[in-house]
Length: 531
Image (cartoon, rainbow, N blue to C red; front, side, top):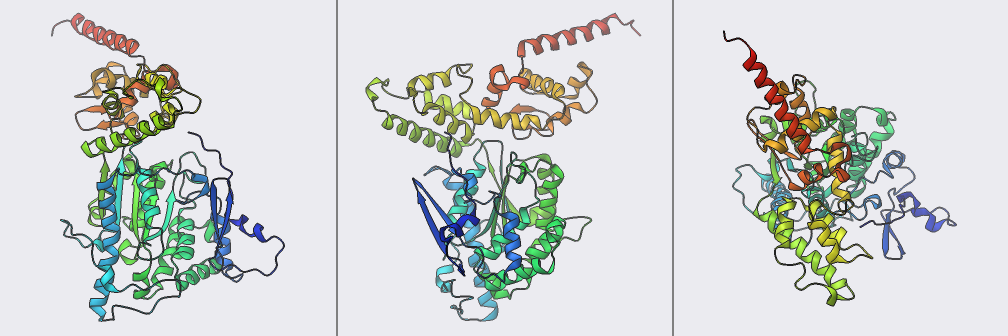
């Protein structure tokens, strides 16, 4: 469903008081209610003296990278009752670290359980309210797990989980754990690279953590380094984030919100940038003296597809020591979550229809949910696209559902989101001819024992197959001795010319070509004289 919204920049807030003079907003909120959209504007500057923060704001305003940005409305979120186990696992990590760090500090220093507030805006909580909420089989303390990697193939719901956690922990009081968020987007020229990543995080730390000393330190850093906006990512991270955090007392650090959520790291279109972000954040590098992540109080939840550059980095021993990971795969829990999502979605469509007597009974018919679940193969995006198409206004839902169930889909426009996703992934492979040939081979053989055989049969360039596979880990299961397609919906897409267009795989053509090449090789071999 398309949502039409008018993007409104945060710096439009003063327009409410266009005739007023000498007005200063100090972290105040102004609400504009128009139609069914309630837009909140938060003043970002408490004083005209904060010239550094003002420059930082000017640099990052309008990015649309934050979890509550108008540019991302409506954001993807977990459907109620789904992803319970994964949300609980990640929530335990988020909440337990704060409890463990504060308990450790008080035990070590002997300070009272109720400390003087850092500033008047932050409520003080007694230590009895900050006891650990869970135990884990992991022998490491929560504070030693500085990074949690949430990964899965395309369309499995990573962004929805990241968004749900951001909203859950972006609250003042006991649940205020979120310090900053950044959602990458391949289709946005400002968000498909890390140019603004650390500038945005620094600004969020200054304006949302409610610590006046940290705010002042970040403001001072920008004012003293006017060229910081053109500096390298490592310099920005060190001078705007690391050094201001390290300037705080230990107690102030412990009372900060510390969770940084970075979604879609794989949507940095240059693999080297993906690696660089991970190196800077973790401090893991063989050549550059990056700051070790253990020296600052922040923790990072990073969500991405398992692209090669990211996968290679997170499998290093040094990264494994400071991290945990959660995979979104096609297991029973995911199956049941998508089933609930589809069931509730179809019920909502049925209830909203004015003449339900025209629907077949039952609707959807028996077995349809199981068929759709089999096609989804763990992809929430598939289920979401089905519901959008079936429930579209001025259409008859039972007819739309029949269109979906037809093979091939009788309406080529039924899966626009899914088709765009697959085209984006395939566009990253440099040589289209090699790509189509490799995909045809995977579809024809289902599994392979030796893919270099494909190179020899078709006289492809040496290494052409590994290059084609390099950017396809989000849609293919690739192991040492086999390659299979992650999702049935991807196979359906490839074999429907109306949807895949330039990436269409004509199986009859490739089957005949493959057989012909094999026969030619055998004939040539048989014609050689016996030695």
